[in-house]
Image 1 (cartoon, rainbow, N blue to C red):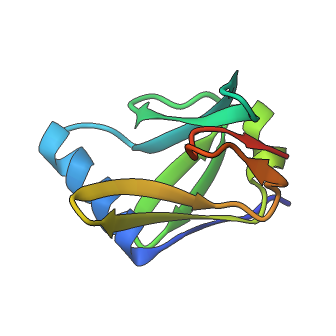
Image 2 (image 1 turned 180 degrees about the horizontal axis):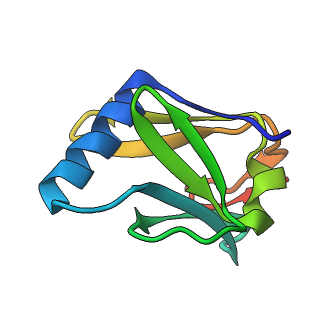
Length: 108
């Protein structure tokens, strides 16, 4: 069974954004071929959910992962971080073998 951890900071941000939108079930995560290293994360709002998506819930927030991304994200942690003026979701993914220099793509 796949695991995905959601930090309290990520959960708070997911809830906050959904509250601002006034709708949504959670955060949807998938991957797509991209960049110089192979794959990149794709984030979207989950307003509806398909039976194939894998649901993770922690700290009152939900993350839905597309079936093709479950193996690549297994064991990952979704965090929300602030670095200087930038704020973003960060994936601490133990399956990543290499990342491009700009941090936009990864290889598993």
